[in-house]
Amino acid sequence: MTRGGPAPEEMQWALAEASKEALAVAPGWFRTWPTTEDKWSSVNVRAATQVIVNHSREDDRHPNSWTVRAVFGTHTVELRLGPYDSKEQAILVAHAVLSVAYKD
Image: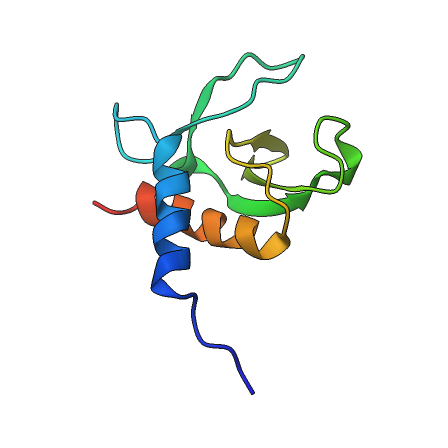
């Protein structure tokens, strides 16, 4: 048996999550977590080559959690969303990020 799409409540939650970190300056801009080498505080997801869900096991801040990241060529930036306890939640939010970024 195949699973249908997410329930409306799940999608509404994911859209609310994504919208919390979207910036009103222009479509597609989201807050990010700056790293020690980068001082980015926001990125335009529309310019990303990919939006991915990543297991945070390698990240000591959130072990065994899932995060949403934007990829710009060889550079990856963690969006200021989550972390989420399940991969399914993070995937829903990643889809919602793209929906919010391209809603115009």
